[in-house]
Image (cartoon, rainbow, N blue to C red; front, side, top):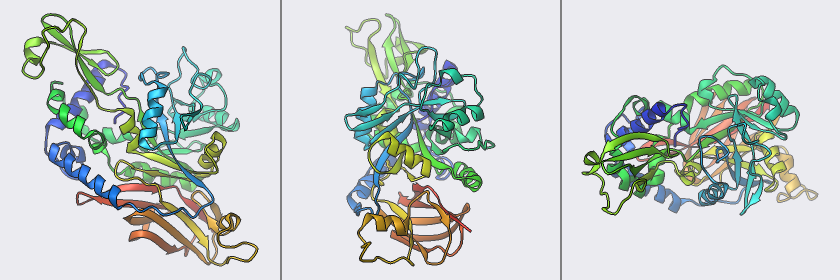
Length: 463
């Protein structure tokens, strides 16, 4: 849910307890404090019902494309990172539960392990694993060990990795709005930690962590809705992304920043006290048993060190389902994933709201008609007359956008950073009457409020 690998126990405690305060409060404005409104039983129940209704209404159609669509999660941490204890096996299981077919790991480099050589790779139980690193403000997917380049500055590191056939994305864009690194693959256009930081009340407030005991059943009953309550529109990220794409194409991806390290456990410390630890086992507080007695039953047979209560706020499954990056690939292989990332054949979707499979957008050249040599159903013909996401070509008359979605949604067509057309429906048609950098956003109405659902990568139509 949030990027909880804070550099000190006090900061981890501050952010974590702030989260508990918000769960305990039931007020806030709809726009700036969505989390405050959503984190109560009535609101979460309504959100669950809306999600179930979306699932029942989905009618995905076949994708008119020669490419296969796979769901990927980028910015994923495992036990190779100092701030995660996640085993690869449990992350793969969570990915399958979330509908993910590609996991691109980004572990923190350390002296103990080489994140490239020791990182997970290849197919495991049908999920493609790719090793990578989060370092120097970048998500780095190299083709070689990064050990020799640990002292390199971001631009130098990006150049080295890209020159050797790897991929590089700017990470945590909210901290690096002035970055413009030449030749990188792209940037995050959504990050869950950035969403968390928008909720200033979560970071400012310090309260008793025993609030968690009061909401344990709520979290257990509505885990995805609770995790995704912090979801907001990444307006600042998208504005900067539009600016960067004017310099050169930047592939936009979603950053799950998945660690499974936000939570607490309460252990019996002695005959007179309990110890509250974070999800990684680091002590946060020691409290008298008398203080917790009204909230927590301690079995008479409990011994020192026994876990009395455990709550995990960010299990991998819910973090990975929250947002995904869909890739248009030839097959499920790393070279095919590499090619899709390189050419921007991708879109970001917030699948916690609704499954985005079935979305497609392309520009068609209506001046080119099927011929006996190339019938309409022929893949080579589709490649000839259709321009997929990420395409870069010259404008001419006769170009038209054609899109489809598995749910009726509001389509917003963005050209050069400005919304130029809006329409509701499952299908989208719009003539390309001028050059520009085009992308679309799809919004769904959730509990009488519009929520961003799908963010496409651009199609570059040059003058």
